[in-house]
Amino acid sequence: LGGTNAPYQELFALSVVYTAAVHPPRRLVPYLFALIIAASAPVVYASLGSREVALVITQLGIWIALGAVAVLFVSVVRVQQLGLAAGERAARTQARVDPLTGLGNRRAFDETLGRAIAGARRADRPFAIVIGDLAGFKSVNDRFGHIEGDRCLRQVADALRETVRGPDACFRWGGDEFALVLPATDRTSADRVAARVSAAVESGVALPSGEPLRVRCGSAQFEEGMDPQTLVNAADAALIAAKGGGPGAGAAASGAADR
Image (cartoon, rainbow, N blue to C red; front, side, top):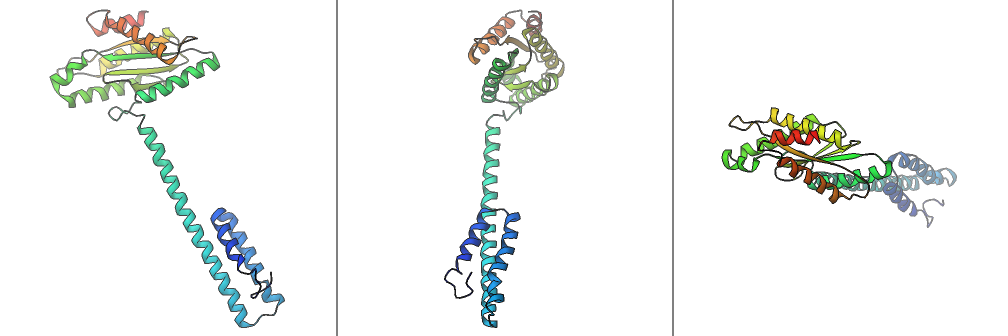
């Protein structure tokens, strides 16, 4: 290792900076311990004077300080990277959440539906979707204002969350349209879920006038050969049929449950 006059003595600084920047502290501490022993070896075998000993100690202090600066710099960079990654994850999550209701939005629905179809094909198990819209909701904002309309939408979202099972996913599909993705569910069970949702909304959400808010639902079961759009079209056709079941949304909901 050569002592204070060796040409390679200053290379210790490069080793310290590299090790401090690349390796975690649990590796840096034993490395610095070995460095101190190696750099101090000339004090033992070369019988250095006090001036040379002071120079070795000074060099060790400088190297350790450089290592501390490298650790601090890398730690700050890592914290910033983690913050950016967390912000990116939060942004991705927010991009898939409806800000008014807290349910997943249309993008989240499309992604979940794609994963559900892929899972159903791999596992050969049924799953179904339910699409519903609020009967006569387009006139609510005109009659009672947007604040009351927003309140109703939030209460509908709460009713959906309280009605469906844990694995089921709820989405605000459009303005007054909601959708459910129901894994391991056939068409008959999906119709029962639609009936429960209709009953929960009717009993739990009321307009300022005291009238109950009603939801009409249509369901469809995934079958081999369907793509996401075909499945949505099937549920949408069932919803249109439910709307034509009678003047009241309750008749439409019971019609969906009877199919």
